[in-house]
Image (cartoon, rainbow, N blue to C red):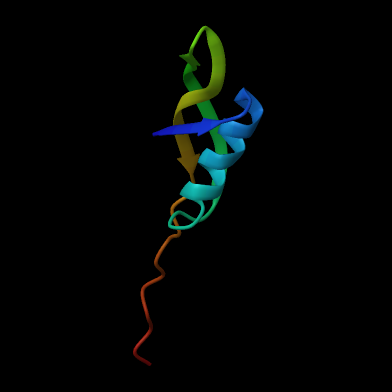
Length: 65
């Protein structure tokens, strides 16, 4: 996933916020790569490529008693 932001910190926070809209139980984020976007010789934003770790809910078998 790539998320742009005004800083690396901002980009990571945006990545977690966007991912948490559809994924629950996020435990950690591994930042695999960082990009700086440049326009007219100035850094305009940062992007991060992340891997997100999360726990999967277990499904308990239902008792038919």
